[in-house]
View 1: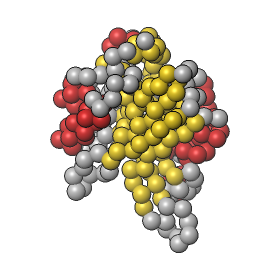
View 2: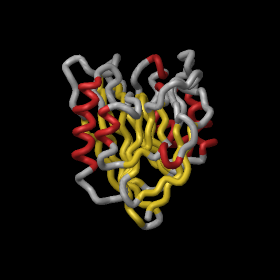
View 3: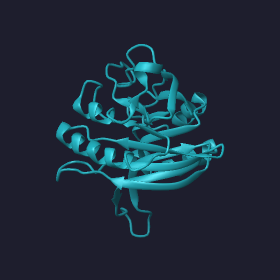
View 4: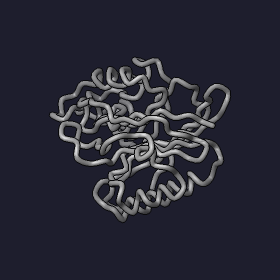
Amino acid sequence: MTFNIHHGADPDDVLNLDHVAQAVRRSDADVIGLQEVDRHFGSRSDFADQAEWLANRLGLHLAYGTNLDLDPEKPGDPRRRYGTAVLSRFPIVNTRNTLLPRSETGEQRGLLEADLMVRGKKMRFLNTHLEDTSQAERRTQVAAINVIVNGSRLPTVLVGDLNATPDSDEIASVTKRLTDTWPTAGKGNGFTYDSVNPRERIDYVFASSGVEARRARVLDVTVSDHRPLRVEISIR
């Protein structure tokens, strides 16, 4: 599953991370890529370590990718971090976060890699959140992601909020190597944004060869400004 949790705030910007945890639990997803996850980041999330809290609350393994790493407001407090997370029922045997290209004014984005051991077989789960204000920047970020995707023969799933619609150059570049699972496994338009009045498909689950998508659905959840996308896959 992929889910942009908007640092635990609903469409009215009311913070309630427990609602996010409940939505993830009800989804019954085995592996979840989360975007916009705070760790002691600021008052908007009560300076909580959202990644650790969700992992503990749900009893899942955790990988975290820090894209923004800021000094604390008070000396001695934890550093203020913002990025992406992977939660998994399966053991996470290796992780890496790669910072993606950005302009001087763009927000730092990243690609979080988590190697999972699934019933004795290793697979790669990638999670990202691309720039929302510049298509040119997204293109360079996708190019960097493609290099990493091409660097392994493991069965691979890439998820995330790509801030691009299916007809864009960015998505066309991703699908040169990976398959967009929605057209083959989903029904309807697949809109995920915004959660109250969905009108765009910008959240994706892509799969490499050797990974088959069997069913995809957008969950009717409004605890964030995005709706989660859940895909059932099998690994040949």
